[in-house]
Length: 251
Image 1: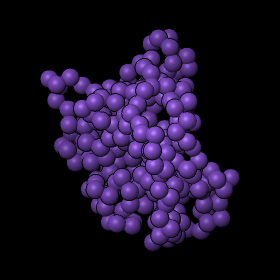
Image 2: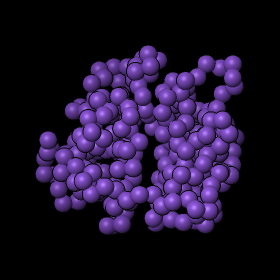
Image 3: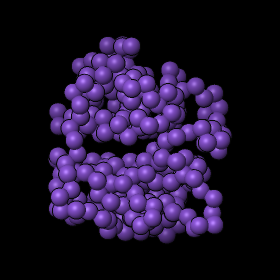
Image 4: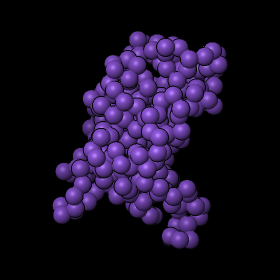
């Protein structure tokens, strides 16, 4: 349990650092690790200034739900968002429909919602999927719910920034149209990542390990952010803060 908790907290801290240059971050209702990271960044550095977590009461000033999120994205007012998928391929395409030929996918997944729309409009889209296997990171997705790339004639200011998993962090090179391995989490190895990634990517034999979380950042997460996380993700908070998640909201 301790290792799982520590790994999740490390992911939260890593994402928080990726959001320091953002002004406004939006997070979906089923994204506890990105949501906690956005709250951590705001609590630590004051940036992003605005965090909207769909489904939250205390940390969501949208009154129109997803519709208002889409409007803000179209107006260029959202700097970062998170997308995942049952499948993600080497060109940053994501599949949210299901495995196999559409419409006879098996299993069927929840569907695309506004993923393609947001992928085209928000400048920093971080793909996040904890499971890092050839089942999820595939050579080519079975169905493109949201494309990672568009042709030059298509207006698109948004797109993939990187891919974060339980094993590694990849940056997406839009010119090369492929991922580059940036760092390997301490619990993994280059051999492990090569064995469990279904698409090809650029890497160096000397790819560094992901830096451990700053103790000061962990302190803010454990002391200040835990109550905010519990408000919108209570079950998740009970997992990563097993002792203190019910202690109330620290400010």
